[in-house]
Image (cartoon, rainbow, N blue to C red; front, side):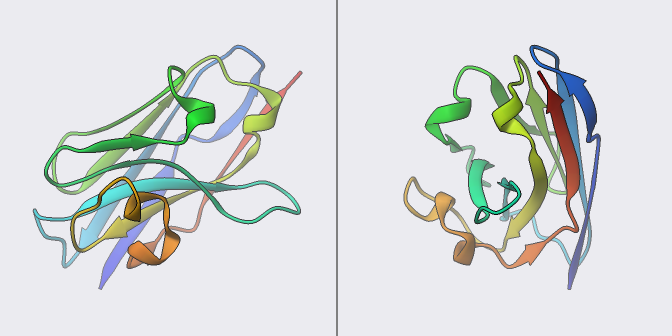
Length: 125
């Protein structure tokens, strides 16, 4: 089992920044991949960004140039969010995959084996 704990969400004005963190514990492996999804009210959970164990990085088009995903070890991943917009408002979920990812699989929630509880990000206009 792997446990994921997100932190760093909050309320920010449009144009501001937030940094989300996700810490994994339990039976983690170095050959894992991690990602971020978000779910806005009334919408399905949607892919935001992911980083594979091999270093591959993937973003949804709407956040390219504004968000940056990074990791400092096999257990912690970050999402730096700049130039935030009201449409970025959502609950952000950290996800953990036991294997690698590619451009297609990174965006598929079924590629991930474990999920965090989520952290709320609210961007006011």
